[in-house]
Length: 319
Image (cartoon, rainbow, N blue to C red; front, side, top):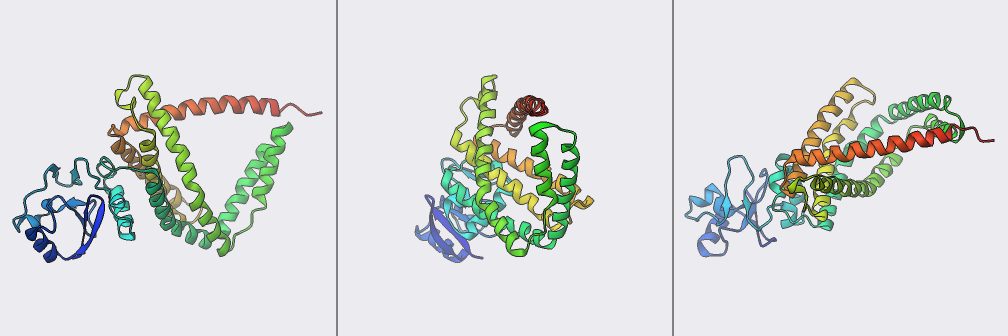
């Protein structure tokens, strides 16, 4: 079994178990060096590996081992992507975030640009499902768009003025939708991969606003949350939510199975998202959820008021 070893966020290489045992005995490796192999949720100090303890290696200082949980070293990241930038580390990061996001991100540095790189990698891998589903169900997707267009046209017929004209144009666009070819589906998927992080960034900013708003209402843990850390954690949580949902693209559009699977996976993704934000900021995930709910209610009330005003103005006939 090949084991990756790193020290002070720099990867030392990939070694066999026997090489590491000899290196620990000779002083080449330290008990505090972090190590990872395929199947592990997070990087763990060599001193906390059972096979190396049997070789007489002392436990790593400052490490706390909890059965079933990722091992954390105070002051040192255990987030695989921050230890090594490689395909295996990207995969390990995704697995560890999926299994235990709060523990993995608690000590992570969460610098913006390295986080953005990982987000793009995960999005690119997840987009394979969307591309395959888009090619297989191209005609069904187009038909669903045309059906939606007919519904919008019905609504547009009841609205007068500029707003009604805008609805009518949107309905015509949907009704004239044609099935996309494989090349168009791939191009659309790649464009989405490039653009979606901007949406994640906006949501992260809103998440921070929601948390700080709770701080204004007296929630102490939200009074000092960092903007950069909140945005990075939110982006990772959102890309995990998207990755969890991506497999439903393989299901037939407007099918009952698609709707049920979407609901189940969406709930799972939301749980992962708030665990990621809560763990990164060291706050209760329910507090993060409460801040998002507060902001959602405030935004909905504001948008509904504005839409009502514009709809009222748009219904006035233009002479």
